[in-house]
Length: 246
Image 1: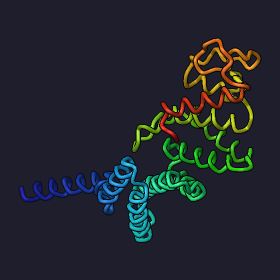
Image 2: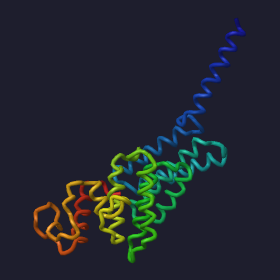
Image 3: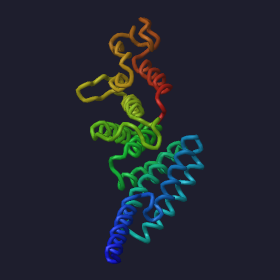
Image 4: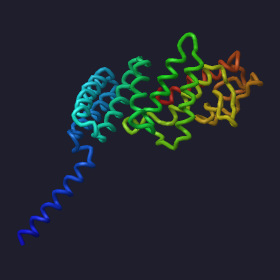
């Protein structure tokens, strides 16, 4: 009888340890790290980007310490990706695009198919490429990431901030092509500012680069703008009011 009880106890202990080994909330202090990441994102969503960044930075230090103690702590490696993504987004909002890009690239090393990381990296490239003068090569990097997001089958919104979703990507694509001077509606290559505007709002289908009377916001049959490019720009600005700016 005692032997049966002992065996049962051993089996129970193995089961508990097995569960804990696969539970990020109980693995090498993972629970505390996850809670702090969620706290940082809550602060981020409230618009306190400096405070959120401070939480992410301190959490990163603790996570890296755990990694030094146990390089095989795979669950902590996954957590590191989330932390670097958070640091990246905070830096984006604080207009530090170069630093943001660095952290998004690090995060992709931990988790390649992260929507939030991919959109963040795309945004960083867009910001870095659309200064003065325009760096088309850098903008092309943003466009390539945008196409990859849609072809990769990754989720269509960011788990930590659902307001960051595929509409942000579509808007960024329109802005990126506009910055390169490509105003087209190229359905074959899924390219051009107008193409991506129509992916966001098909009501602008009336626009025609060859017909000045379509160069307006509301299809009113009047020429509101002096060029097709000006009309496209005003539509992008209008769409930004409805899409969370990435």
